[in-house]
Image (cartoon, rainbow, N blue to C red; front, top):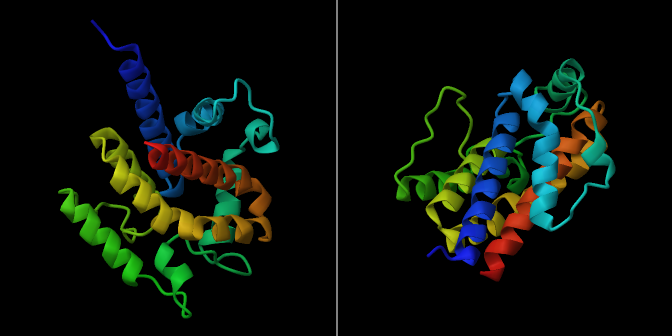
Length: 197
């Protein structure tokens, strides 16, 4: 006999892991036609995790134009614009705004503890939001809820809200803002769910 509560919890965990993966792809630069086509499903999935039956915010109704988004991404994060917004935790925790600080080392050690390597083709630091979201998905799949809660609380949620604020004030930021805010929503939902278990 199947336990309905366990089945529902597994369904929710599966959705949460898929959403982490989808947003990880975005921030790691894997923005394919399929990703853009899935954007409404990503938003509705996050709303479902929040317990909302229908999305109502401006981010949820945002249409993402691939070319405009790539241009805005370059302006905000690749140094093409007036200011480069870093997508790694170490940059937000040091006065020099440098990569590879204590947060990156802590992430590397944590990933290795779970038998994971991050020497992928994208060459991103281990505390990059895209890598962190992929690891969060893996923690959900493994049922490592306590580790997930701490990882989100002292990791991504310790600095991602500041990234969202920086994007709000950046040239072209309004184009990326829906994804940044949606990422923040997912991080907060997942951390709250993990803390409640």
